Length: 501
Image (cartoon, rainbow, N blue to C red; front, side, top):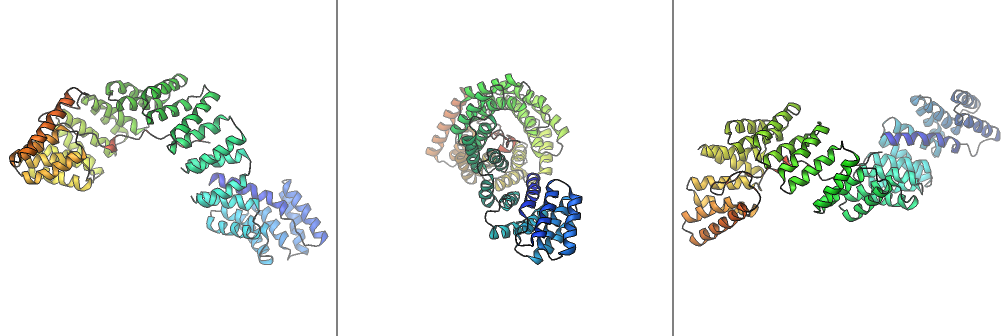
């Protein structure tokens, strides 16, 4: 409401002149004009004395009560000012100046709904009233009603590029990117080749996934100010989203040349390298990002994840443990700590961490699935089955839970029950060799030879692909591998922040 209130206050001052009486005696008209001039000159004490003198001889003059309301309002006497506006409207219910200035007062005293009603009434009486058009639009915007706010605010802005640009910024901050783009484009037509306009236009287009247009706007912005690192950072985000790793890294390297302390860029380079399965190379960039911005939880998370991907589990646990000193109530950190411990085979530590995650977040399917896996490894079959079924109930697309529950049932010789679970696992992740191996076992025991042969062949094919592909997350045994990290642990690296003033 800060911006809204500032404009409302300015409008209340400008309305003093337009509030001059229209059908009063010439002498009163002159006296009111003189009092209004004193208000405009900032001589409020003299203006108040002059207006009260008018009311002494003309107590039923609505315009005088309205003017006194403006004076008292500007002197901070809002309760007394409201009484004067009310007095003016009792005498003349359709007095536009009193209605408009009362709307300003109501807005300033946090009575938005009442203020909106007053400005709506003003526009019914005077559809071209500039102050009411802007103020009503500002109040609608403050309530998040941009459908009604934007047309009014655009009308108030007219062809003023400064106001159009400011309105575009406010809309972008409210994630109303479509309207923001239109206003930035209008501003660009009125004031072309302006860095701030093109830069924010690029951001808004990016948030609409109009990547080619965003790239064009940001490229123009970078040409206007080649020493500014921000456009290169955003251009890198666009290239990354387009799958062009080489271009993304080139832009981000340029941004770091211009601003060596740029945590977001270091973080994004780490993300791009990790996305391309270069976990070890990503680690130094995550570390640099964390060094430059300790307050970002996601930097801790991703540095630890990169170490897990690189099978540096002891280092990952150090990262997560240290992060918990700063964020002791974060369930994801406990989950990841348990995940790294499980990868090392440190089941006691893993169980402790997973249980702490569940204490903070009781319905965390990934923690339940991992506890179920460990319980099955320890022969605690009944508990494992309960945990895995609960994980599936909470997350019907949890591949690890289907895989591990199916594997457990195969171990317990409950083959008929295992097959639909493992089949569902294949639907969720047909590239995992382990689930095909477990299906092979189940079909073999059920003497369904053709299906068993098909699953065995697929297991061998995928196992061969994995042997000659990227380094697996951990060594495999009978097609088993540590499940992928959950999406909740991955962090958010896609969208730029809303533009600032």
